[in-house]
Every structure is written in structure tokens, then in C-alpha cells.
Length: 151
Length: 81
Length: 99
Image (cartoon, rainbow over all chains, first blue to last red; front, side, top):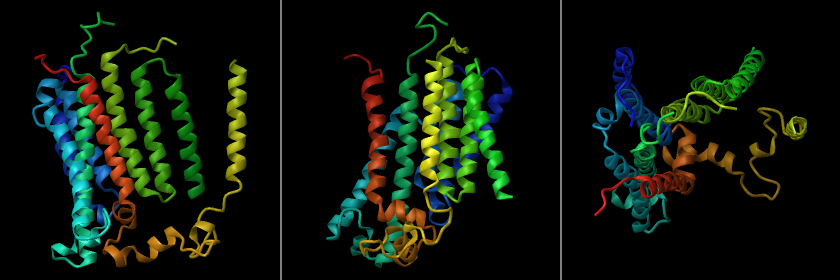
């Protein structure tokens, strides 16, 4: 159990910085085709903003935006979307994860690979962000300092 | 010029690593560990591996720092050894 | 014991420095990794990516192309590893109300 910070400076700073970090995370994920970055880095940034909120505002308020169950669902959905895109290429009689074979949906092969990579980046970002947030929540859930006699 | 910058960064890396091990206060150790990660990210970027540097900066200086400080909430603030 | 540790660290450092001194120079265009054909006559992967990444996928950042397209199996494995660690924490640590 993490209690809300007693310092108003910490509260205001965390609440001001978290949305900026989230916008940066989405930019890093979407713009990975043209600049350094990509799904993993953007997902970790997204998770860092959510963990910052949890650490500064305490468990009760910090978990309202993305609950623990939602984070677990995110990570599962991201991994499933990645594998599902591979299966989609399989349905177009290509190899697993060969995005050029998705052109049976109506795009030329190079464009199919471009958009396939975009979907993969978003899926990786969602999966990593959800997994990190759910690991953090699971590790801290219910283990209070008072439970173990203090230190 | 590049060589000077890299030598400075490497010296700073060694100082950050040694002080992170030496501090008795665990909060200071966590803070210097994030400094270590960030200097390592700068070194990666100076070698041209911008993606690796970005990952190191985000993971090492962001999430690992948050996880270490969250762990400090659960234990004592001083190292005993 | 402390002297033994210092000696081990010093020995390992010397070994690493010796190994690094045998590597090709930084940015050497004739290094084996930058050739077009390997010694066995096959295409070298890195050079192939540099030459064909934009033509194959219309993406200027070839690191993204390598990670998400040419080597997407590795990225899938990475995502599955992260997801599996989250799942392990879920099953071991999450408190659910007893039925």
C-alpha cells in the first residue's frame, strides 16, 4: 500500500508530467518508422507515466485511470494482436508474420509491410505497458509495512 | 573532441557505479543507479546506437528507478552491510 | 577473500581488453560485418538490410524494419516473454477473494 505523497509539490509535478509523458509515449510508438524508438520504448514510457501516478498519488487514486485488471488485459491483447497479424499473413498463403502476404486484403506488398509494422509497433507498446503496470501492481498488492511489524 | 567527451562520460560512468555501490542510504544508491543508466545511454548514443541508447534511457533511468523507489517504500532506508 | 576478488576482477578486465584489441576498428568499412559477401559466398545480412530495407517496406528507419519485419519472430518472442512474466506475477501474487 503506497499512500499519497504529503507534499503538494510532488502531487502537482506528477499530475502535470504524466500527461506529457503519455503524449511522448504515443509519439514514440507511432513515429517509430521515421525516428528512433518504436513499440518497446513507447510502451515502457507509457508504463513509466502510469507508475509515476501510482507512486505519487497513492494506490487508490493512481489505479483509477488504468486498473490492474485492465493492465493485464492490455498485455494479453497486445500479444494476441501480434500473433493474430502473423496468422492473418498465414491466411494469405504466406509465411507466418510475412506482412507482404497480407496484401490479399487489398494493399500492395510494400504498403502492406508498412502498415503491418505499424500495427505490430502498437501491439508491442500496449503489451509491454500493460505487462509492466500489472507486474508493479502484483508486486505491491497487499504487502503493507504494518503487516510485517514495521521496520 | 569526441574522444574527450567519451572519456569524460566513461569516467562519470565509473564514478556513478562506484558511488551507487558505496552509499549506505538506499535512496541515494537508487538515484545514482539511474544516473549510471543515463550516462550509459549517452555513451550508446555517442557510439551511434541511438535505439539502444533510447531503450537504456527509458528502461534503466525510468522504470527501473521507479521500481527501486517503490521497493524502498517496502523495506528500510539504510543498507546494513 | 577480498584480494582474491580484486585479482579476479583485474584478470577478467585484462582478458576483456585483450579480446577487444583484436576487433576491427570503429567504423572500418572492410570489417567482415560490412562486406557484401561473406567468406562462404552468401549475402551478409546487415548489408542486405541496408540496401533493401527502404525498397521492401518504404520505411526510412531500418532499425524498425529489422525489428518489426525481417526479425519479427524475435520481437514476437520478446513480447511473449514480457507477457509471460506478467502472467507469472498474476498467478503467483495476485490476491483474489476466496470462494
